[in-house]
Amino acid sequence: MTFIMEREDKPKLLGDPVARVARREQLRHAHIAPLAAFVDELRATAGPQASIPDFDPWDGGVYAQVLFLLEAPGSKAVGSGFIS
Image: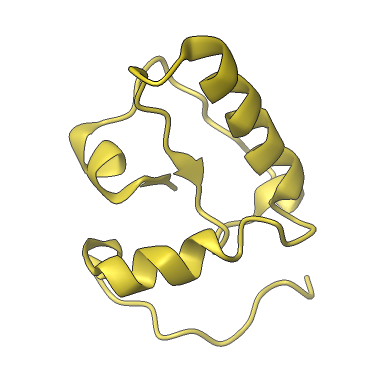
């Protein structure tokens, strides 16, 4: 898959605000853009009170073999703004 690049991944990386900004800039990459659009639609429907995290662009996106979509994100996903 061409979207996978060498990255410095480490535990709790999304706790860093600079890392979160960089990750958000990647949400329009081809492999994640359809999922990012889906999140945008959910947010528009649910309103500003809803906490809906983005899909992590460092994951498989539309090329993932499995997607688990659960009822509600955990507190860490809400805090970082990303779900993996």
